[in-house]
Amino acid sequence: MTITGHYIVVAGVKTYYETNNGPNDQHTMLCIHTAGRETRQYHSMMEIFSSKYRLIALDMPAHGKSWPLPGNKAFSKRDDFSAFIWSFMQALKIEDAIVIGCSLAGNIVYHLAQEYPVRAIVSLQGVDYTPGASDVALAVMNHPHVSLQHSHMDYSASLVGQNPDPGAKAFVLWGVSQEIAITKKADLSIYNGFNIIDSMHKITCPVLAVRGQDDWLVDEEAVQETIARLKNARKVSYKQMPGVGHFPAVEKPQAVCDAIEEFLPTL
Image (cartoon, rainbow, N blue to C red; front, side, top):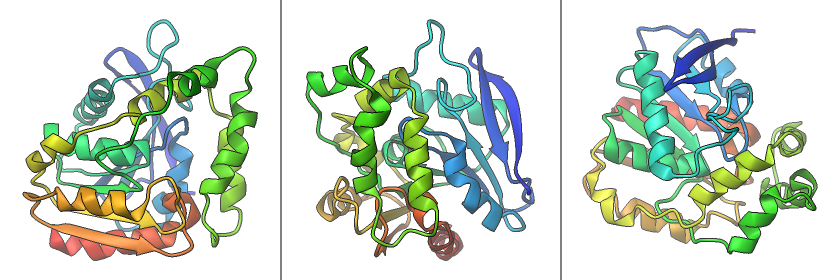
């Protein structure tokens, strides 16, 4: 096993991250998890790329093995979420990184590329606009009479594609059972109503957008509209994945790695 875990203090938060100990003289990729989850979503990709590229995955504050923010809180604002990722990169002296994110983080990487000098971004199931949910839907995510894990189990199961790798769907559902209500509500407070449409012209780095075709939450129209607004990006690549849903890095890690390797020569 090539993956090792570490801690570093970032902006006053004891932050957990993992690396596959790949070569430092090649591309460095920073991996950001989906809402409510943590670094293990990227373990398969980290292992596939271990002899080729250095991959680093972090647990955002209040996720996984990272400490929460003061007052046992998580980030609920987009700008704070992105700023912490950049602070982590600065603390670890990660330069010229390719930043990979999925779902909420797939949205966030577009914002990150607008505000900070990254080498490139890979957006898995990400868009520049996600409509808002009702205040009631957000409120019950952290309510003493509601079990977040039980209420979200069928929802998450429906987001997995028809042809995941063996064990992938079970792992996605195991992730649901470990979610923290405070954290998931904060994450989805960012995701619901996320809107950076008017600033997409600021992105100049290369972009790879990946969409699992079975994902009903992030549909083809929303992804194509997002791509169309990348008017100043040096290169835009798009990869569709049949039989894959909302969690490509878990469902088909080899296919995601292949798409990234096809993208790398364009950087």
